[in-house]
Image 1 (cartoon, rainbow, N blue to C red):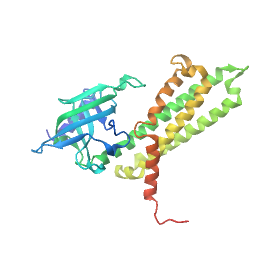
Image 2 (image 1 turned 120 degrees about the vertical axis):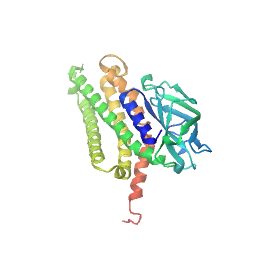
Image 3 (image 1 turned 45 degrees about the horizontal axis):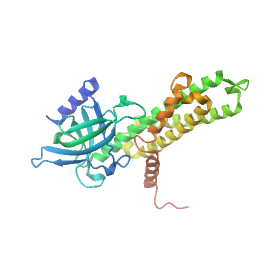
Image 4 (image 1 turned 90 degrees about the vertical axis):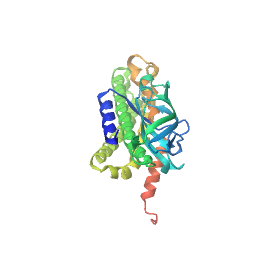
Amino acid sequence: MEKLTWQKKVVNECLSGDKRICLAISEPNAGSDVANLQTVAIKSECGKFYYVSGIKKWITNGTFADYFVTAVRTGSSSIGGISLMLIERSEGVETKLMKTTYGSSAGTAYVIFENVKVPVENLLGEENGGFQCIMANFNHERWFIVCLMSATSRVVIEECFKWSMQRKVFGKRLMDQPVIRQKFAGMIAQAEALQYWLEMITYQMGVMEPSQQFFQLGGPIALMKMFSTRVTYYINDNACQIFGGRSITSTGMGKYIEQFQKSIKYGAILGGSEEVMGDLGIRLAARSFPSTSKL
């Protein structure tokens, strides 16, 4: 089947809901360090197929997926030896559900590829050119994670506000206590800063050419993602103090706070850990800074 034909077929099937697809990048020994992945794809002697072997881990939707957009090593041990290809669930593909804090509905999976036969037409982009595709996709994934962090943070602040207006302690509403108002000041200031940063990046993503986005927005998006999870920690800590015991109860008026606590750490890990995001953002900034600059 010609490449354009199968690509159209897969896109239509997934958008219609007839089939499911997932992104298979992370491995037991390669999470944020994508360049260290060890799943290999060896081309057949006839040149018509790749044979893929390796393990992927923490693959969202992998349990239910019919297609796996998979990062594999087709060349050297550096980032220049990584390719991206579409692997259909077939003989040699095995998935195992991984139970996580946020539940099984995400279908997080341990995926085993054992000598899976993949047509060369299923290569996405150029052979050994997959790392650039992965990085370009990460910008959008990280942007999406920030959207979630910002939205849920604002919901939590709203819940805290409503609770503070009705809860009475020591003869006054919580909102009448100066210490509580200071907590709100800090939470709202950080949430608004994150929202404004997100809106600025979103605008730039809308007006920049994709090739320009890759070089100009990779660093800012990485730093924004790191900042977003720092903000959620701060908001979560204050929300727990405002709700007290209700913040650790999965039902009732504090249930959203309890759910927030269980989910915020994922934002600091998925799509690139906080530490990697901070380092990436500064490395990219330093790379574009004139090396001859002096005070």
